[in-house]
Amino acid sequence: QKEVEQDPGPLSVPEGAIVSLNCTYSNSAFQYFMWYRQYSRKGPELLMYTYSSGNKEDGRFTAQVDKSSKYISLFIRDSQPSDSATYLCAMGPGAAGNKLTFGGGTRVLVKP
Amino acid sequence: EAQVTQNPRYLITVTGKKLTVTCSQNMNHEYMSWYRQDPGLGLRQIYYSMNVEVTDKGDVPEGYKVSRKEKRNFPLILESPSPNQTSLYFCASSFDARGQPQHFGDGTRLSIL
Image (spheres, rainbow over the protein chains, first blue to last red):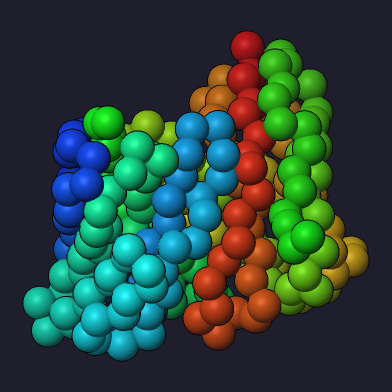
C-alpha cells in the first residue's frame, strides 16, 4: 500500500464548477501538507501549504486537512479552463531531511 | 525572478555515456533535492542536500551521483546511464530542511537508448 493515495482521474468538470480533490495517507508523522499544480511540460508549482489541521483559503482555492482521518482536500471554486492541469498532493517530513512524499496526481480537465 | 533552472531540458543519449544534468537556484536556499517522475509511480526522491558538502540518498539513488560544492548548484550525474533511467527529472529547493515548501524547476526529460 502506498503511503499517499490519490485518485488519478481524469476529473472532467464544466467551467464554473467546484473541483474537489483529495488524498489519504497512512503515516501519522506527517505534519505539513501541500498541493502542487503541474501543467504539461512544466515543473510542479506550489499552490497551498498548511502546517496543521483545519482550513486554509487563498482566492479560489481552499485546502482542508483532517489529521485524525489522515485525509486532505483541495477545492477549486469557479473553475476555469486554465485550471486544467495535474494536481499533486505532497506531505512531510519524511524519515530524513525535508523529503516530501507525493501522491500520484489527479488530472483535471475544465471544459469551457 | 526566483527560480530553479535545469539544463538540459531534453536529452536523448545512449547506454553507458556519462551525462550531467545541472540545477541552479537563485534563492539562497540551503536544501536541494532531485526527483524522478514516472507514470504510475509519481515523484520519487533520488538524492538530497541539506547544505554545501552535505548530501544523502533518497528513495531511489542507485545509478546516480550528486555533488554540492556551491550553495546554488546541485548537479545530478549519471555515470553509466541505462534505459531504466529514462524518466522526467526535477530539481527542487527550499529555504531549509525544516518543513519549508519546495520550489521545482521545469524538468529534464531524459531518454536513454
